[in-house]
Amino acid sequence: MDIVSLIIQLIAGAVGGNVGGAAMKNTSLGTAGNSIAGAVGGLVGGWLLGPMINMPAAPGGFDIGNTAVAAIAGLILQIVAGLIKAQMNKS
Image 1 (cartoon, one colour):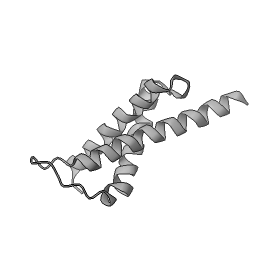
Image 2 (tube, one colour):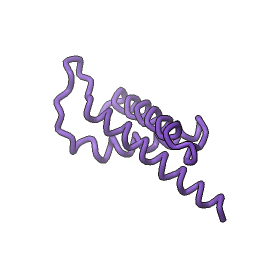
Image 3 (cartoon, rainbow, N blue to C red):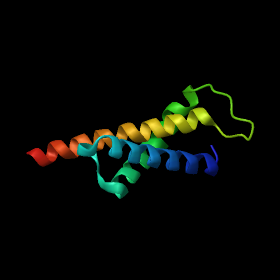
């Protein structure tokens, strides 16, 4: 895995995290928190689940499947982190 793929996974995860924060206001961690949680989720999700996706790369070498997995993983991790934070604040 090259550095460009890692950067794309981080950015896609951050975008996914911010989408998750915007979609579910009660789980939002703020822009920075959503971005960090999403980037971590995108990196880990792209690393773990990316190889399982057998989509061919686009003509420019851009891997759509791995990018989509990173964005979805970022969204999921942000929502999970937001739900955990919300439950901790209730106590």
